[in-house]
Length: 438
Image (tube, rainbow, N blue to C red):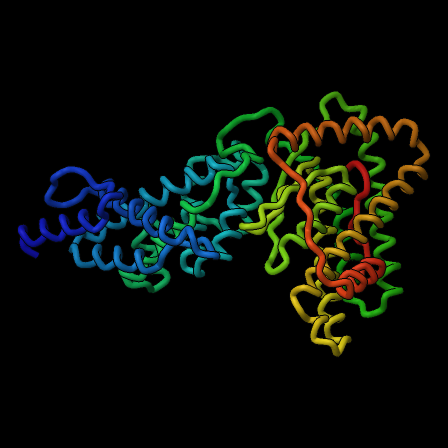
């Protein structure tokens, strides 16, 4: 390409961005930084246009048009690749500073963009944490990065973008379009509460999490799996009762031991992502399980997750039990529709009412079981003030994170669904419930 033509193409690339362009300067060929700014501008435009959609994702048309402009500009691959790398690092840093964790980004991507864009974001996250050692990172970060298999697989001898595109056999246009869509999603993510410290940041006891003993968890998980798989309610009830007994004994012992320690665990927080549909109804189930374990929960319906605040070991049990109950509730809801010839039993109104009733009844069962367990404790007089102090600490942590939190009701429009949901909750197995302490 001749020098005048190359200059023309570069100018056209800058002009494409209109009033939101980030490119500056009069260089004949944009620098990597200018290309990175152009990528950011295109992603911002795609995010702004796509923000009004129900799926809250970047506009693919804008992403494609920008990719065409880059392809026609004749820019060298290493300049484009370096610019994309810079843009990705900038946006992911902003997202993490706004409270999102690696697992959260991965969950949001799985719901809003395709597998190539989601994979690109996993790699961008792996690149972001490269400067930090595991010792300087919160345990939750390490666990989530490992869970999504965020690994640096590429060479530093050339820009990551080109190696990523080649690995997935994407054309230049396809790769740039995917990147714009991925970054647009990140730009659409709202600012969240910082529930875990950022990599490299030091906070007292930030890296120390108390967990349920692995032997106890292993036995509970085994009982839970058997309870979910059996088709015999009596067998499931026996299995769940044993799991509940194990967790309750562990909880009683742990809360009393912690009462004697000079520096008990500070309340922590984690997010549980829920599948659509009926997110609000499923979030209610998380809420009642959290309350039974002296934790607090708040839902972000638009994005489909619930944040729970409590001691780390309690949060593990809440997630374990919630997962089991959601499996049981969904299975019972589907079976109820199949067993009833009336099409209304398979309607959205019926199913939402079913799940709300199920969650409400589970909450009642858990509250009653918690009260009974405390009453039967051989050291209940000592236990009660310890539990009260524990709850105050959790409430204070929750209020600090969510000072504007408000309760919200859910409308029930199917009496049949409500009755069926309560009946199913009475049959549910409270496998991994941990009613008190940790």
